[in-house]
Amino acid sequence: MLAASNISKRYGAVQALDGVSLDLPDGEVVALVGDNGAGKSTLVKVLSGVVTADDGMIEQDGRPVRIASPHEAQQLGVSTVHQDLALCENLDVVGNLFLGAERRRWTVLNHIRMERSARDLLSSLDVRIRDIRVPVAMLSGGQRQSVAIARALIGEPRVVILDEPTAALGVEQTAQVLDLIRRLRDRGLAVLVISHNLADVRAVSDRIVVLRLGRNAGEFSTAESTPEAVVAAITGGAA
Amino acid sequence: MTTTLVKPLQPLRAATRTDLGAWPVVGGLILIAVVFGSLNEHFLSAENLTNLALQMAATGTISLGIIMVILLGEIDLSAGSVSGLCAVVMTILYVRHDWNPLVAVAAALGCAVLVGLLHGWMFTKLRMPSFVVTLAGLIGWQGLMLYLLGRGGTINLPFEGLLARLSDTWLPAWAGWLVAALIVAGWSAGTLVNRRLRRAADLPVTSGLWLALRLAGLAGVLAVVVLVLSADRGVPMLLVIFGTLVVCLDLTLRHTVFGRHMYAVGGNAEAARRAGINITRIRVLAFVAGSTLAAFGGILAASRLAAVNQSSGGSDTLLMAIAAAVIGGTSLFGGRGRAYAALLGILVIQSITNGMLLLNVDSSVRYMVTAAVLAVAVAIDSLARRGQPR
Image (cartoon, rainbow over all chains, first blue to last red; front, top):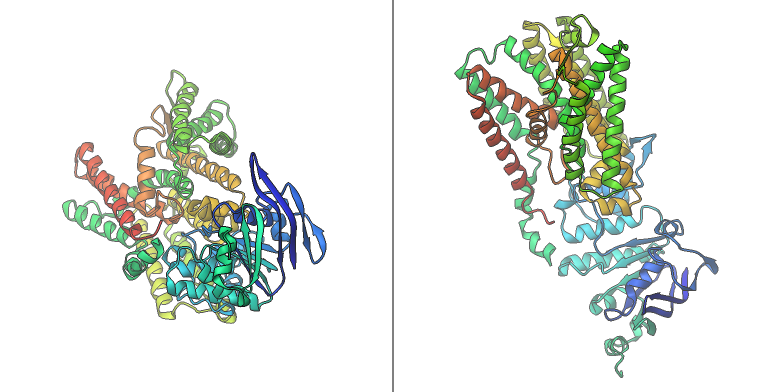
């Protein structure tokens, strides 16, 4: 369980985050929604160590932790899939999954061990790719997103943050990725999904956290909320 | 949006990208052999093919170095000048200062490492474009070479010395066959072990028939090479050195963490950085490898000429080395290509040069034909990339 409380971050004259709190319990998908400029990206950057908060506290299992760099975030088990996926299109699926974390004997790559783990991981996530040894450039958008998410799992994280995972996808591929997110939850991971698409959010999340102008603007249990209430919280209008 | 639009193109993309690999180049080589062979009966003779093998080694080695830089999507224009400079450094230490030839070679390679470090530093720390860094290198290192040569302009290597004899060393027939047999045995053993390990890990394996075909192909090509070269003076030592470099570099690129990171930085530097790869280190190492291989090529060229002079590493050396890398299938966009590209590419270029010289064609025509081949090679590369989302 990762919990951030009273997080504030100021960029010059802009108060991007103003005392925001967010809980990410194990085995739950939390959707973070809000209009442009609501502070979603800044909060994600704070949690993934890209920027440090001016104020506030992050706790893991009740103990306060410091996340000062992406590396420290990864060591704490916080893994982030950015919207641009950051895949090397010329490398194959195995190469991308283990990029920067190659299994090796001295400096020699252990191709067989990496391919075995890659196949096990992809099949446990039910990701279907016909040939995992072709360059990623030849995969569909949904498959790439799946590869990027699978890659986030290589370091055995406890929290996975997905930034707009369905933004560039068609209907069928979106469904595939949403299935994949549910399987992450079933593995007991805490999942944070940032999305603009309220239909996707309602389909996959357990809880919806709304930000507005850098502050918490509402928190809903997905099953018990109405779309109108969520939209109202996002826009600041009356429900 | 783009991904959904691109999706229907996938079958087409798969067809164009089913890794044409080396086949267009091999086809081109066969075409060249047929054309020149029919125009001049001397072209396919053992003596001429041996000369061809000798001519390939120096520029081919420089081309290997250029591939290291091109793989990152950068360019090294200084390779020719660096090859000339280091050959001159080696010769001066060896001839004028009576150093041991091997120490002189090591010192020259050391100079190349420093040059590569400087280029890498300017590129990564001063953020200068690689084109400008190495353009300055192209001009500056040639200037330094001319300065070191002084007014004399030419220094001969002693004919009986180790270095001059290197390019006149030939493997006797039995040694040639032994080397070929060892390569085939090594390749088979490696493939069989890999196959067994993959089976044990329950991974799919390539079909046995396909492997047998490849083995037969490799053995056949090596047998023809040894047969032809042994019919003349034997397998030249220069070819053995060049071949060893190609194989070692290919194994390094494909099977080491360094090689994997080279491809990663060439494919998507930002992704590589976020994955925790030290991209500055990879870039500097690529420039160092490029300069060092260029210097090695320059030393091979000096050995073959038994001298260094003001045109060492000059004229069209650099352009031919870059052209060879590209014709062999290295993508100038970075991230794609193998070390064998240098071997195949230089084989194409040197065959054209050699054939044109035999036909007594003016070098003007030779340049135009080489240009056409280069253009076709890049067109194939670009077409193969078309349809890839980017």
